[in-house]
Image 1 (cartoon, one colour):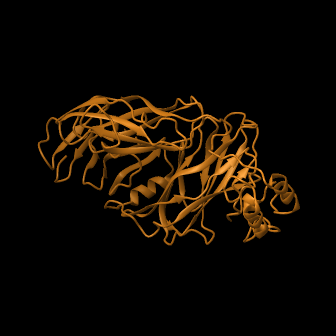
Image 2 (image 1 turned 180 degrees about the vertical axis):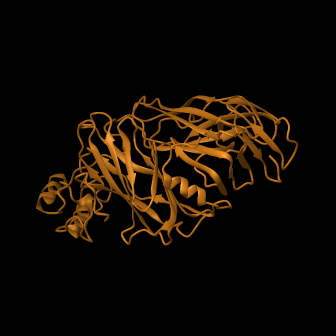
Image 3 (image 1 turned 45 degrees about the vertical axis):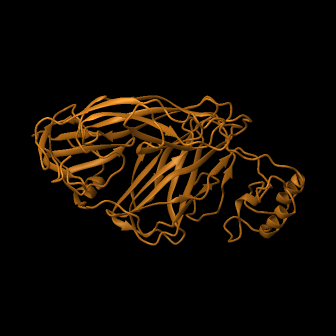
Length: 448
């Protein structure tokens, strides 16, 4: 009952036998940038510095290239999460021939058996999007929320993003960002005058007409703006009000759990202000009382795209119940954004969860069986690399791990927890919950 995944992925996970928690690696100082492919074509695997464009219509293709600088070692896995408004864009494909790509709604996971070395240009991937609504005249942005580089099972680096791509926005001649187009901006413009896309000194922000050459036509646009004040670009696309983010409707998939049992925590971020908000981060917390605050124990995060006034973003995360029985409270707080009118209302109410001790199996080093509909203890949330895979496979779909086992197949985690299929017809697990067969769980010597 193995999931229908490509032979390459099955081979990869069958060979994988890695162990140990990931720690900071040699690429901690690397950076990542986006480059718009103006014609939407294949691209040239060179960073031309194009960070703005004009798009119209619904179903329009947008293609970008992703580049990293400062990556000094081969990579075995890469996790990319884009930052965009899902009501405007959707991911169609993310590709690099050296990796096998697994898509989800906000990005992709790249995997390879033989660690891949990036080219000298730093090219990492080509990504393709399409507009899901008519965006004619609508300002929006595309960026990267997070990107993680996995050198091996024990070494991982989270990389800093240096830019985003803006669409349908007027070009600004305020190059130094001081709010006025003046002599300092002119001197910066002169430094790049006469350069063309692909040249060493070309910078797309000085190409005011976007034709690929910084020339006389750009100079005329600059002259027309000289001496004028330029409003601050808050990324809102036209609203002059202030954003106000709140977190509403916290809920859990099950509020009566056993120790180590997996469950899902959900919450909705809403912009109740009258101005658009920039992208931000939602942080999930566990508390010992019914008041959720940023001083509670953080248990996970989610990236939240920019929201228009009255816009909402539904978020969720897979968690495991604590190892000790008791009553716990879960909720979430959203990071404040620039210009927010009220930052004192950014945390949700709490939802209570009762945790009881698992029945049977005894203390550390125990073994229990779990059937269809039951949740596996110690199951990781988010992307993970197992310590051992035998006669089994897994993939990620919509941010959830999907496991498939032959009878006797096993997957072992880095903490020593082992999931073994003991059903003649095989076993399936989705998001930590058994959907077919019976799984025997053996915990490490430390218990839990």
